[in-house]
Length: 126
Image (tube, rainbow, N blue to C red; front, side, top):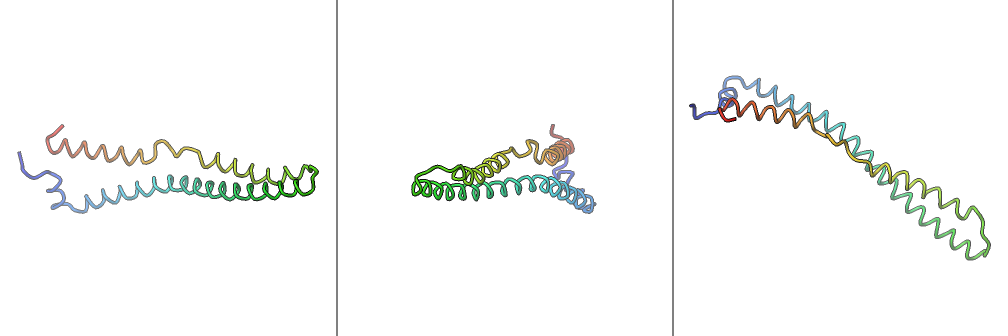
């Protein structure tokens, strides 16, 4: 049995094969990160919209409460105006709470597992 793992002989004799393999990993990682990255960006935007809408709701609800207290009579607009940003906050909150794809980077993990198994087989270990 050789003391040097077969991967080292490939690294020395055919480095372009290893570079092509690493480039394939980089392309696969970039492709999967792009798909997950767009989902993360959507969630970040939804959280920002939720925060802004919640802040606007609190401000408008406070103004409506003060106007209702000063006037002494109830008007439907005092409920409707703060309700609009509240609905926006709830919608943004439901979008922001969605789960990320369950199998993010699954193809990359599968490829890494296959390569590790191949290296173990080459090295003589099961």
